[in-house]
Each structure stands twice: as structure tokens, then as C-alpha cells.
Image 1 (cartoon, rainbow, N blue to C red):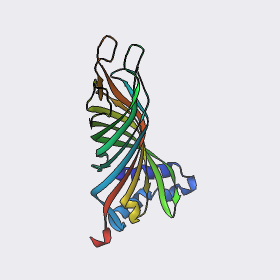
Image 2: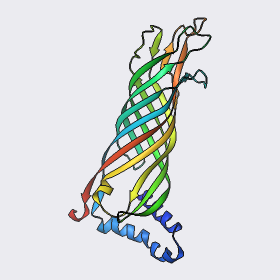
Image 3: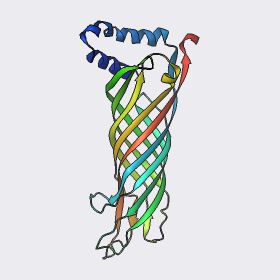
Image 4: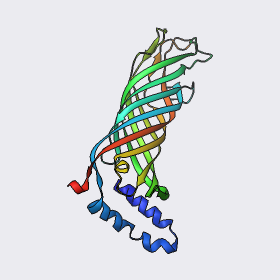
Length: 246
């Protein structure tokens, strides 16, 4: 939160006209004053969040390869918590809707599948800079762009397939992308209690979620992993207290 306010103040000063520089130069002092003495509502460390993700590209590919790709999609819903202002541990449910790839060398016919799983993960963010600084509904407003990176581990349930040669496994994934959220000046309770994050990412599966025995014509097996491009909406709620009650 404090880093966001610093980026907000810096962006306002850099974008200001010379005539307003003198006024804007006192912004850091004003923010410190309101934070320490006159802010009506202050955030606590207690918070809770919900997440919703959609992978509009969710490839099923040969493990450790960029070949044998079949496209699908996936959705996920979960809960999260902000820790140290930059880390977000998560617990979520995910469903993949995809197609098992096939090839001329394989007797296995391409077929669609549905796969459900429960996962846990950790996402970190690093604020980069602020933009879109303006006055909105009587308050100072800006958006913060950040870099996100994370990893997760998913326990997959059995796939709904009649093929006896199919075995599902758990998968480990890593992701990287960009995120954005809004920051407000002033002390309105809603601005202090709620933060909405938007994130876009690329996710790569390191371990296979699917193994098919007798996949090739020679009877050998083949394993598959996921690669995804998607977006996440994260809504965070923070418990606040009234500064004047302290």
C-alpha cells in the first residue's frame, strides 16, 4: 500500500505542469500526515479474497515439448490472502475442457475430456509504476501496473474417459504475467476496504497430468502437460478500523 502511494505521488509530480509543481511537491508530506494523524479508516493485516480465472488458451501438449498440441479452455475459482503486501497464497478448484491429441502414428483417436482438480499456489507481485493519475469522484485516483509470478500444484481427479489406458496425475505449474489494480487518495472506507486486481499470465506445466499407455503404434506410452494463457480477477477485502477510535 505504501509503495503504491509513493508511485502514485511520483507519477503525479512527473506529469504536472510547472505552475502546479509547487503544490504537488507537498503531496508526500500530506500523505504522511493523513496516514499518521487524520486518516479516518486504516487497513489492518486481516484480509480475505476471492479469485476467478479463465484460460482462453489451454493447450494439451506432449510433455516437455511444443508439439502434439490440442487447444481447450479452463476455469478456476478460489480463495486467497494478502501477506506482506506482495504475496498471495491461494486455494482453488479448476476444471479443464480439452482434447487428447492424436497423430498419424497413434491408434488413439482424438477425443475431448473434462478434468477437475483442487490446487494450492503462491503468487507474488512487484509494483512497477502508476498511470492514469486523475481526480475521480472528488478523490485522487491512479492505477498501478505490476509484475506477477507464481507457482501452483494441482491434485487432479480421474478423467471422464472410457479409455482404460489413460491415467491422470498431479501437476506442477509456474506462471508469469502483468497485473493492475487501483489506488485512491483520501480516507473513504470503501477505498480502504476493497481492492480489485486484474492479471494476465502465461502458465507452463512442468509435470504431466495425463499418461496414455499404448499411445504409439509400437505400444509405447506418452505423457501430456498443460500450457495456458489466461486472465484472473482477484477481489480483496481488508478489515479496517476508525483512526479516531484509537
